[in-house]
Figure: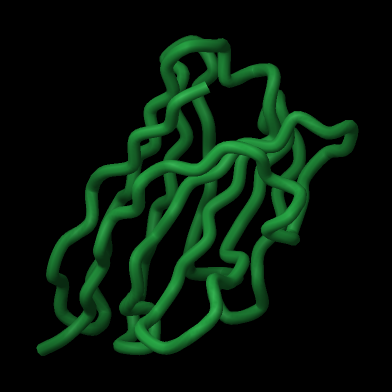
Length: 124
């Protein structure tokens, strides 16, 4: 499966952005999906994950209650709604797909397929 992330940009602190990840080549319903991010000079870190039918989600503590992951399998897309953005949310955001058995996954090694990343910059 090929993944294409989009929706990044420059936003002021306290603002919102919605990232999208479109899949091609195979139905997204075969995969648990996740979003990760990588800030300059830092390791890629987990942000959120969603189960195959969207019934279960999990978030990192740093984004919980501000970000929402969702999916539309009919459209082969996964989204990340980001609200109340902070400067520390600045990073390249990646979507990823995992085929292993399980509802959702927090670790990079659980994911086989990755999108190319989209830059999110939170600055005044």
